Length: 114
Image (cartoon, rainbow, N blue to C red; front, side, top):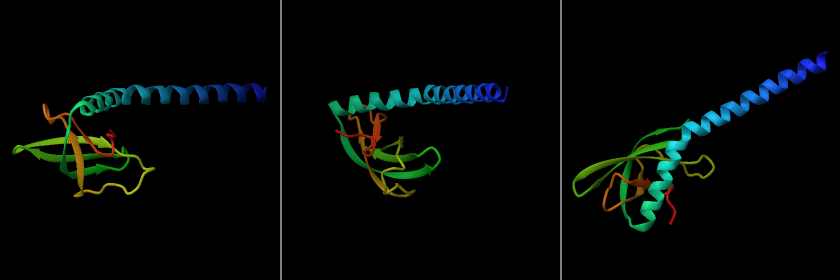
């Protein structure tokens, strides 16, 4: 009886973990799709400029940055990994790749590799 109860508990626990993983993947999918689209567009044609980091969310490992092209300010959001130090800090200057046709299409150089 105890073994059966344990198996029921283990099955529910494993099922809950699988549901959480699937939900996380579904929530992150639009962002990953956008990043992949930006990578594809930037691999065809891009320019590089310096951007300044405005803020960082350590839990979500996102950096928020601003840069100026032809007197117009643009902003962007990129991810970074905790596996590859040094980590970006607020106020740091970073290289940003942007589309010459639409600077709203941009990625931090750490997220875009040619």
